[in-house]
Length: 318
Image 1 (cartoon, helix red, strand yellow):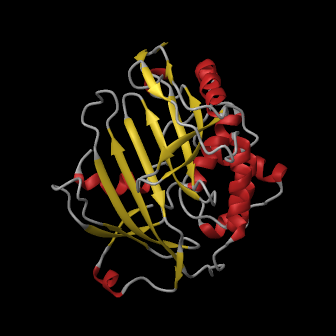
Image 2 (cartoon, rainbow, N blue to C red):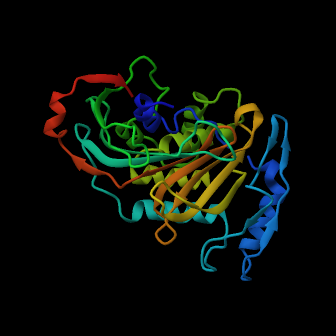
């Protein structure tokens, strides 16, 4: 990674990353969840390292981990977490923006090395975003200074929507507003979108890929709720406790797959507030690539870009 690529990394955090089934980790997962669902005090659980086709990969760091349990009143299944997240999405919706307005929010991303991964993190990237609702106007990204990367720099950039690859990128907020909330129709829409990103994969993987791509930025609350309900029906999901890029601990829904480099196990998660079940952000852990965390704040709606953006020249495309 280099300093000039930070903004691109932040913008495309979920654009083309590998993503997650949990079949290979089923025995370990079952043991962990069984422990988490009891009311006893957590105990140490020994897990052997897993031998994969691409080499030796540590499923958990070292041979012993401490099992973290949720509050006994917390939901025990991934499906229940996603159901509550769907309710939370429509409980406090933000005002409906016009097509000619902007969604203004903050996106935070962090990378960390895992198990000796070279040249990866730690680095912390904070970006302030003004996203065009219908994609017809240039968008503004403000990359702020990072305390964890003293050699980094602050810069601001105007971005236009890429016209060279229609349909391949993330739909605009206005596009998503037109997506169906009917479960069967939306499932078909997600599968269609996911197929553009992961060819020659099963339908479940394609739907999950679309879910990850769509939920990486603010979307209309009704569509977000409907997508959570579809995600809850996908196989291979588990719950765990993770911290988002701001350091806040939450309940995570994780999908596991062997789509990392050389068939390595990849864990991709959405992290929710433990009390409100509002989406906080997510995490991806891929052996050989390290750990990536992201968080987004609740968007505000504005009519114009800040006055200082007029001095910027349009740069690359989204």
